[in-house]
Image (cartoon, rainbow, N blue to C red; front, side, top):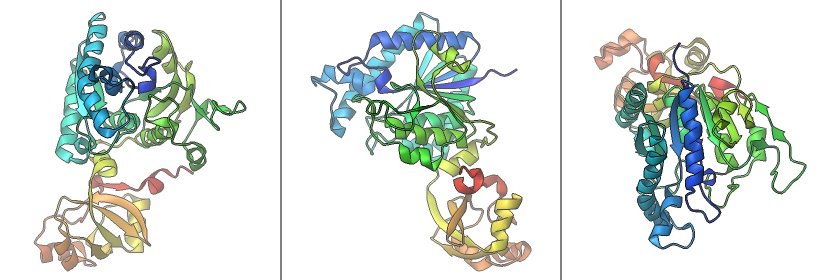
Length: 375
């Protein structure tokens, strides 16, 4: 039986001391818990924040910086200190670690996305613990992944994880803010993330040292569910905390039941990361074939094209003013304009192409609304 694969995400609030600096005591506790998880024959990937917290004091900042340049400078200093702390802590358990610093560009570029997958796969095969953080020092948008929340969901999907554990300073998801409303009730289990739950949750981070906030975690959880990964959001203490969470004894909220969707790598890239180069507008027959019958998109069902793109580009498929799917095209926009509405054999003669499909089903993903029907 294959090992279960667990992604553990630890946010800034779970790594810092009362002054916002990196807490070595907390690092050691997390390390002990991960070591115990690996000893129980689980594969583990760690998504860890904490670079800014580790580095700001060495730069002379009295508190955690608030400007983008200050955070990036602190991350540049702190990332080495953070990975050094983890290296020393895991050495006690004879665990070798590896560092990966990622940005959103690594996900939007198809080749780099594949390289991330290959690297993680090889590291896990070698029983190495990958530790992943956003590369804040070069990120063009401030805190792109929301304190690594969305990053943890995307990595979980990429490696086909069985479970994503998101450790934070609040013990789960509540219908109202438990810090300001004593009558707030916790959700112990959620089958799905509904629009109602999203609307109930504000963006603000629960901790002055964190950047994600509970809304960021809910959005990340919804993404993880769509990729077939169950999620836990909550807290814990001691070296047994991760094992307790996996044993359904965690202090938090368990999210996801009966998950079946599990996109392979190519479809994940199309669904979540690929840049959109144009639109293909289709008729009712093509729409029904794509949504209900799992068919490819053929030239006969195309009404018109929007945008200029080459073969290999990713485009949206639109019916009745709604985006129903995305896919990677076999033909350029110019070729589609010449062949739209035609049977495949005629279209292939017009374009001198070799493929009957404009978008093959293996390169096509339904929109989230069409695919999952969450509500």
